[in-house]
Every structure is written in C-alpha cells, then in structure tokens.
Amino acid sequence: MIEVVGLGPATLSLITKGTWEKIRERKKILLRTKIHPTVKEIEDAGIIAESYDNFYDEAANFEELYKKIATDLITRGKSEDILYGVPGSPFVAEKTVALLRERAKKEGVDLKIYPAVSFLDLLYQKASIDPIEGLAIVDAKDEEKFSAVRDFSLIITQVYSKKIASDVKLSLMEHLDDEYEIFYAYHLGLIEEKIQKIMLFELDRIKNFDYLTSLYVKKA
Image (cartoon, rainbow, N blue to C red; front, top):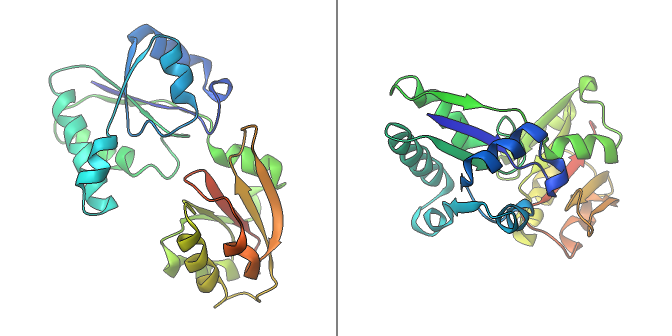
C-alpha cells in the first residue's frame, strides 16, 4: 500500500492532525524532497525521513523525474507499505501523485491520499481571493496558458528564479500593460513571508525567488 500525505505550505503547525499522527505512528516517511520547511521539525521529532532528492540530479527534465519517482513508489508499494509525503497538498499541482493515481489501480497497488492544507489556502487569505469568481492555477513554465488571464485570474506557481520571473514577465506583457498590478507572494506562512503588490515590469527586479514563490494576477 502507498499512503500519500501533504506537508502543508509552511511550518508543522499547518500539517493536519491526522497527517501528523500517521507520520508519528509510522516513524518513517519517504519524501519527494527534503527542501521544505517542515522537514527539520519532522526529523527533530525522531522521524526517519528519506527523499528522492538524488533523482533530481539524475533526471533530464521534470517529466522524466516525476515518472521515475512514481515508478519507484509503485515498485516499493507492491512489496511494502509506503508513507509518501509531498509539499503542500497532494491534490494541488503535484504531478507524482497524479501519476500514482493513474498507475496504482492498473498495477494492483492500494493507494490512499489524504487531504492537506495547500499554499493556496494562505494565498486566498493574504490576497483576499475568492476562487469562485474564476481562477486558473498554472505553472510558471506553462506560458502558453497565460492568455487565460483575459478570462480568469491566475495563480502562477514555481516562480523559483529570477530567470523564470523574467520569462513570466515577458509572457504576461503579451496580454497585460507593463504597469499592470500583480501580487508577489514569497514564503507564505513563514517568518520571512512577503506578499506585496508590484507592477508587472518590476517582477524580475525583486530580490527573492525560490520554490516557495508564486504570483497572483487578477483577471484583465
């Protein structure tokens, strides 16, 4: 069996009670990556945490990476019980979980996925977003989807470097004015959290970008 839990968007306080009890009960968890704020707290509690971080160096691209992780999980899940942890929520922008859902039933592996708090929950609060008004969530590298800003507000995830930010800016400028106001969100839920309104042309002038950086762009 494979059980999948979410580590929440920031500190251990945002992991659900059920997930934390499951982690403590197992005393071991396999992570997609250890690059997440909760991991130190998990290890400090005496939990053994292994990860797929070495797969990142070996894979040619993210598509290959996620397939390799899913394949390894399925292989392990045929002979042992696995507790697999991912950043945020397993149901939000988590490709390895999507692949597991496709393959587990076909390959005879029981799969249980548990709900979790996502970074979206924090962003909704901080930027006063009501998703019912129309919202599309896109990866920063899916630039062909940015044209949706004419019909929906966008949350753009994985703005993890200044280079990516520059590419996002140029792509959005094909649909929006240079001085269009957007929200920059960095390390939501952590001490160094920053969420601020900036003009589109300023995006790649911001200093801080990493895997916990996202943008909110209101419908044009």
